[in-house]
Image 1 (cartoon, protein in one colour):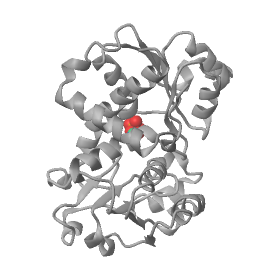
Image 2 (image 1 turned 180 degrees about the vertical axis):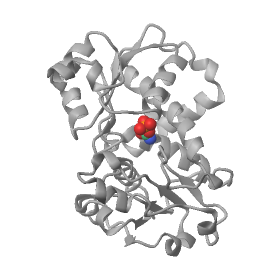
Image 3 (image 1 turned 90 degrees about the vertical axis):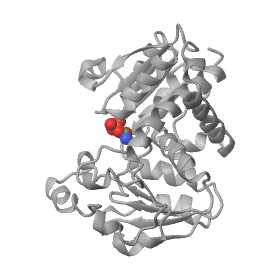
Amino acid sequence: MRHLINILDFSPEELQELIDTANDIIADPAKYSQICRGKKLATLFFEPSTRTRLSFEAAMYELGGNVIGFSEANSSSAAKGESVADTAKTISCYADIIAMRHPKEGAPLVASQNATVPVINAGDGGHNHPTQTLADLLTIYREKGRFDHLTVGLCGDLKFGRTVHSLINALSRYEGLKFVLISPEELKLPSYVKKEVLRAQGIPYVQTTDLEGAMPDLDILYMTRVQRERFFNEEDYLRLKDSYILTPDKLQNARQDLSILHPLPRVNEISVAIDSDPRACYFKQVLNGKYMRMALILKLLKEAGTL
Ligand code: CP
């Protein structure tokens, strides 16, 4: 049984296959509109979500399938103490595929070890968010036409930002990548990501607090929100939350072909004045997420022998 728990579960060739399918869906959605008729997706969201949950649901409906699920832990039997393992076994009786978001790192992995249907990690704590990475990859591919030889700036909360960890993992497999890690001292990329991914593979990176200084070199600027829900201390959050606010003046030295990404939700990191800049890609990213989730559902159901 194939699952998607970590973006590294898929080879670069498989990611390209998903991108090709997503592009084909974009070109001819009618071809896919009944392909999942009679199939059910379960969305098990133990944490809040707008994009991930609703894009999964839209994806399944646009494939002709149906959706069941819950959007908060309190409306499930988790509130009575049911384990993730038992939840996964139970939902396997009702659905053909599961998308799970959970505040605890590793919960979707536990679900995948107990389910009898494919499980997709829709975000686990501060750990990983592989389907956001699928959205990011399609956006980069459609904007740049490649994944190699890019200088990628990652800015904001690199400590708790799970989308950043998954994206670094995914991009680390392409040639000629350079990362510029822009964050306050307290929100630097965790050492294990630097050691196990960047240094282990000899990928060049610099760490800086200076967004404007880094700007001229960047092909991609990936802004992130400071993850309030992961802080132990509200005072620290308040001190750090506005560390980086991208405003038009900060783009003065940016390349004309810069692509600005953000997984969203945005709080204050990107001024709305940037939204009309042709370099802003974050709402395209939202739409791309739906197409990649459609491609992912198709791949996992086919590999499970369900389609
Ligand atoms: N990018 C993302 O995961 O958004 P949601 O939290 O709204 O799903």
